[in-house]
Length: 263
Ligand SMILES: O=C(O)CCC(=O)C(=O)O
Image (cartoon, rainbow, N blue to C red; front, top):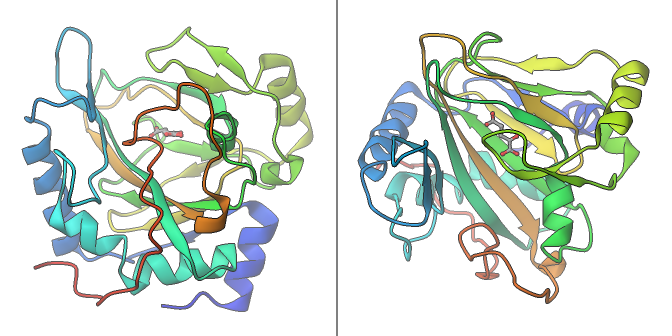
């Protein structure tokens, strides 16, 4: 699958593009079935709600050598529908997956992700350039009440902002500091809720400023993230690197395979 010139221009201007119905209902169903199976596995590749509760984040579903391996995700990340647009957006034929992460934001409990740029963390992982793109796969239909993601259009053009480590929420990670964030909110277009039917795929830039709220609704909000990096942009050595399931060390360039992702 190839993106059009107009889609490439939208991505460059806004920092993201939305591709409705990229995956079929059957493909989405299979992915969700797989995540339900993996949720029960006892491994450090998934993060549970407090006190050993339900798994809320699952990593590394795309690699065969992983306790959380899944054939359908292994096939999807190499399929022309995901890999070809990623190659176009990064203008590079040699890509690998930095990580896959499935965020299973549960009804009532699923909590806030503060405003951040993903590259804030990845830069500290040793990655030099923000030449990375993420394919977000909507597995449910996210809603504003259900804690959908929000993007600030054009905020990727700000480049990499100095992040600060935030421990005030259930997700402890690098966020955009509040004074900077207030300035961004007052000078940029309104944040856009990322909502759409299951099977929608949204590609977004590593520097786009984004966040999501608490899931106040009665519906779970499941979505999967596939982060593509250029092989030539693989992380440099850092002290105490994060685990392989968040900062992959498999730099073998991905080969595009068949578009058939259900085996
Ligand atoms: O899934 C979400 O609600 C937010 C996740 C996110 O922003 C991230 O993983 O960087």
